[in-house]
Amino acid sequence: MAAGTTLGSPAVRTPAAWPDESLDLPALRGDGWSATPFRDVVLKVHQRCNLACDYCYVYTMADQSWRGRPAVIEPATWRAAAGRMVEHAVAHELPSMRLVLHGGEPLLAGLDRLSSLVGDFRAAFDGVCRLDLRIQTNGVLLDAAALRGLRRLGVSVGVSLDGTPEGNDRHRRYADGRGSFAAVDRALRLLGAAEHRSAFAGVLCTVDPATDPVACYEALLGYQPPMIDFLLPHANWSEPPVRSAGADSTPHGDWLVAVFDRWYDAPRQETGVRLFEDVMALVLGGTGRSEQVGLSPVAVVVVETDGAIELVDSLKSTYPGACATGLTVLADTLDSALAHPGVVARQIGRRALCDTCQTCPVHRICGGGHYAHRFRAGTGFRNPTVYCADMLRLIRHVIRRVARDLDARLRNAT
Image 1 (cartoon, rainbow, N blue to C red):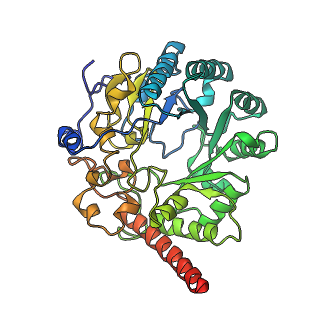
Image 2 (image 1 turned 60 degrees about the vertical axis):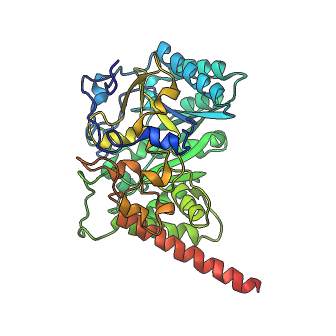
């Protein structure tokens, strides 16, 4: 198979100037750089979705390769994926790997198929290393029977919800325009009940400046999630985010600051917020865990329903074929993908940043922002994030809050 061919589509990948055409892998290796093995595999078990969210990077943005892929993954494909993961774990002596069942909407695959898939992965990993299994769902099909089945399989459940009924239903709707909040609310109430709570992984929420930030956070908090992930809507320099207050405004940063203050000022920790915890850890000299901030190597890869090994699928928001590697679990190892420029670029830390970012005083905290948000047609991904001003707004605010509290503690200690 020719490099750059997307398995599910006749389209050929258009290289980005950076990293595809100008990243010097031999020079990096000569300087002592080596790849970080993959720890997370996102497995697309179903290619279709029962919602039509208006900001979805899979269906509404540049890459439309989903149209040419099988709707649902076949046993031979998932068994090949399991074998490749085990092979990778053994080669790199990994103590654990994480498998995230994804889509589309993964519950459309049906519980019987998911049970068979999980059983095959568990059998493949038996005696090799620990396998952490998760599913990311829109929650519409997450009823009591599904939850019992997922708990029995040892699968943790993450649910997507954009806060308040009005905020959620502005974007997360069925194809006929009906909002999804009522169905997801029922699912989250079930998931938060004592019987199922052990399977609750957290809630994913996309930031929308049109929604009251504190009301959104408190609506999510009402489900008592163990973790909340706030994500910026996917945009880039060629398809920038809407800024109703002007190009110099920071509506997304202002929104996150308001939620941060509500979270940080609570008398006790009510839930984890991954973005805020990562920024605070990085401010204090530690490391982050998310793709949105920091310079830690990204160690995640995607396997599509046809077996294609792809880069993280948020890149579908940039240009057609942006995720393609030309590799497949049916013929290639996961190690083969470690040499792909798109993987290397997300593992080399500061060396992947543009000059503007490298001279920024908070670049070790921001890390250049989300990789997909750096894209500009013609130059590729060596740019600041299109949310640069918003990220600066949040990071500087967190620095001030943390520094003030540390200073107060030091004064009290003396």
